[in-house]
Amino acid sequence: MDNDNVDEPGSIDNVIDIGDVLDSEAEEFSFTWNWGGSDVLESFDPSTDVVNLKSFWTTPESVALYNDADGNAVIDLSSVNNQTITLSDVTVEELGNDNIIF
Image (cartoon, rainbow, N blue to C red; front, side, top):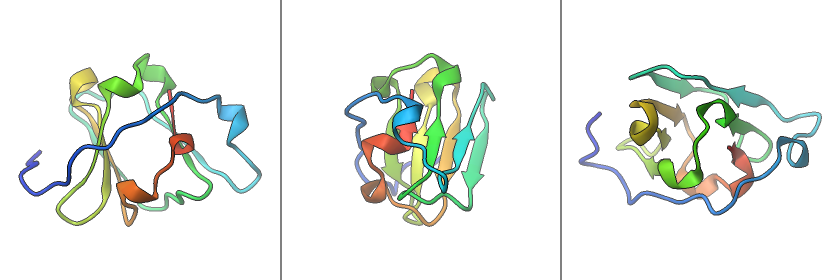
């Protein structure tokens, strides 16, 4: 992946429990090991949805967040398994600590 035109990486400050964030309108997107995969979520709503990364057994420090050249938020798991998850039409600035669970 070409990262020449990306913003500075974001950070994730804390780890939360899935039960604390899900409501009846929330959608949970769970991911598993997919070496070198580049997934794109077209319908992620940062006001309610979550990305579940629990199956990676990783910490927020191992994940980079940045906006790609098109302004889409990228969850970069390169240090874990060379995988990225792009949130189409969502920026890193729109994400909160409750949107990604570990």
